[in-house]
Length: 416
Image (cartoon, rainbow, N blue to C red; front, side, top):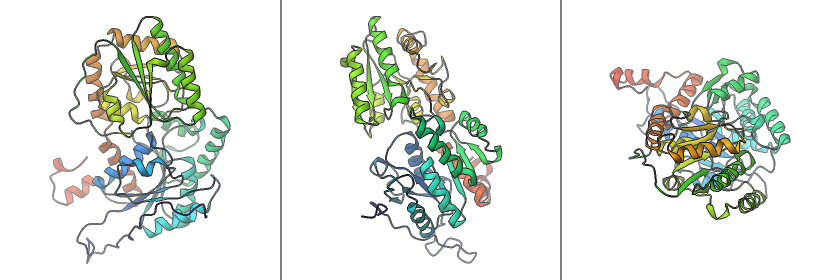
């Protein structure tokens, strides 16, 4: 079987050409410009949440999205943007460049005007397809590729692929100021960079939480792999329990490999905290799991961009204890909405959890500040609006505010 046979293929009608005589097309509805997002697709974690939310919210800001997934997996079955066209390919390896032609044909058939990639693999394919079609190419930097994992060779190879692939990108979107600085350090000029902070929807009816009496449950949400630092959290949990703190851990998310799952479960047993850890596994109901915990802990060792789970926890009113790496400090206000500690420090992590447990940081105030900080800086609508503005600049379209005023809205009513 051809390794690039589509597993799922949604037919996309060609973009109708609008003319002054028929500005809305024969359907009477204004056609939106289209952007094709080229993604990996095997997981449904932070970067995939960004892709999904953009597909849902971009139409509010004048653009339609479509997807091509190069590694079929959880994205197709878990995404909320079910009405967005998705074509899934099966690349045999990262060097299987037959995908370039398939992506180019999908972009041409769907009338897409921009190609937007999100990973080193998808950047390589998307850049070549965009060059073939002479379309603008946008690359979304979700994390620092050169230190994205504990596998140095994979980091090296992916970093080289990324740097070669984005050489011709019209614009790079970074998800935090620290990632902007990282890309500048690699020689990307300022004018090609745009920082757009990640965002998530607000939680309806979210109110400041009250501190729970009795046993506390910490939550860690992740694709569990070595760089997420779960070992440090398990050791901190053991240290807290040795000091008499009654605390549990809810580990929410899948494991990268069965071997790593066995390693973590075994470590919890050796540390004497096996009965205090609930291994929830992958779930589409992350929000419901967050409702059951008292604080979010993200002990990443390195390689974060701006973690979506931190923003989701803040929107739900959870204090967050995280490590000071990449964009996490952009979200967590130290000693206001939670704590920031140094990566790999068991003592600092245990100390921060203990400080929240014992009330050194007022729990209800931290919860209220988390909700407010999310609403002010990290909404999904703001994220989509700023990405749409990048697209408008590339296509030479007027901004949404100018269009709204031209359509007769008072300036105070026009979207920002």
